[in-house]
Amino acid sequence: MLYIFGGLPGTGKSTLSQSLARDRQCVHLRIDTIEHTLRQAGSLIAGSEGYSVAYRLAEDNLRLGLSVVADSVNPLQITRMAWREVALRVREPFVEIEIICSDVAEHQHRVETRSTDISGFKLPTWEAVVNRGYEPWNGEQIVIDTAGQTVEQSVTALLQSLKRVA
Image 1 (cartoon, rainbow, N blue to C red):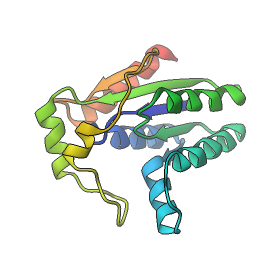
Image 2: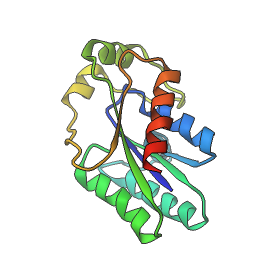
Image 3: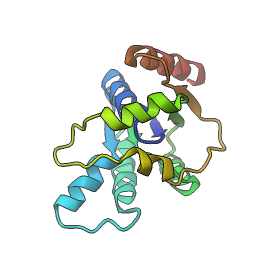
């Protein structure tokens, strides 16, 4: 199974994707980690390099029979289609999960006060999040709205939603 996450920074996407990976013992592929590591190794990230690495790693792990959680902003239809194509190539099911925070003030507060678990990683500002290109989803994705919820409530909502599509 390929779990395809997406959502703007600060919505709770990495927290929920990591929780799901831990709960289901999945490989967790995080674009922020991949891109940061590539930069630290001296690579210039000009576009989709991090996603390209993640697509290949996801395919390799799916071929081994391991489930994969893909954690990325996933802002464009083309990136979402590429994740679906990974699953289709290896004939594995997939589910798309969009994480949102519908309360703008809460979302801004999260972005402005959060810390990172990736050493040396520079988090985006609220202005960068607001001005980021993010195309609407047009599929049958699960949508988890983390506004006004604890992490535990959001995780429960995600697991309940996954039961309905299984």
